[in-house]
Image 1 (cartoon, rainbow, N blue to C red):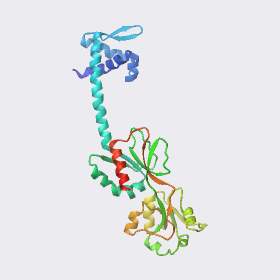
Image 2 (image 1 turned 135 degrees about the vertical axis):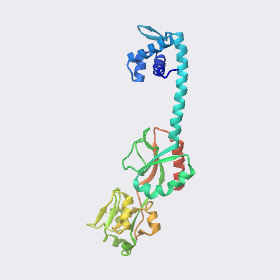
Image 3 (image 1 turned 30 degrees about the vertical axis):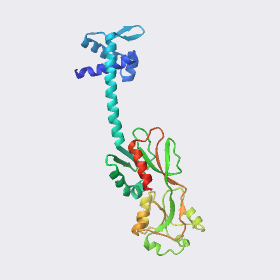
Image 4 (image 1 turned 30 degrees about the horizontal axis):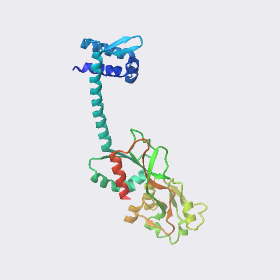
Length: 287
């Protein structure tokens, strides 16, 4: 079969299915005259009439019905194979979105374990701060920090969080009681709860004019505090490596439960792929 006939066969198959050239043209993003041209080209090549033309439309001839059955079956088989190939690629690629701080401080130290357990899955991690769309071309899984309710998403609780005052060893040496924290530079991010709540939890009045440094990325704030910028109200889950290596020290005062928590989210309109299900099971085991 000459490849030049393939567009004509596609146009014919659509016209045969709709029994209407205009509807076929709409489906194929062509004009009705272009569909008619393809069909006439096919008829001329085969030497048979495939449609009976009449005032109200077209109808398949016996020869046309025979060809329509064959092309419809063949195109359905091809479409099934193509869909399977797309699904296989989609199922073997895992697209994850997470905030940079969570990714660098919690996820990255653990992700090699997931890949080792699932070597057939290719991981793509996006740390864009914007709330991305979980559509067909978007991420499969997201890790979000919040109240657990986002429009169009299914959320599964992952873990809670606490807030704790921390500082470098040099700064920490000057702190004997929670009240001493008020005399030091404070480091904060853009989270909705912070130092004011911490001082109240400690039974203290918040300082009237505190020296506050704002760093919008929690991971960068931890690094700055570890180098002596000031006292940071850290998310405990993100600070574990700093506490472990001694670059940050927990200070006297309350470890305050955060209002927000971490959730695994996925689209409510698209079933999770096998790779996404494997990731959700893995990350819950990690917690």
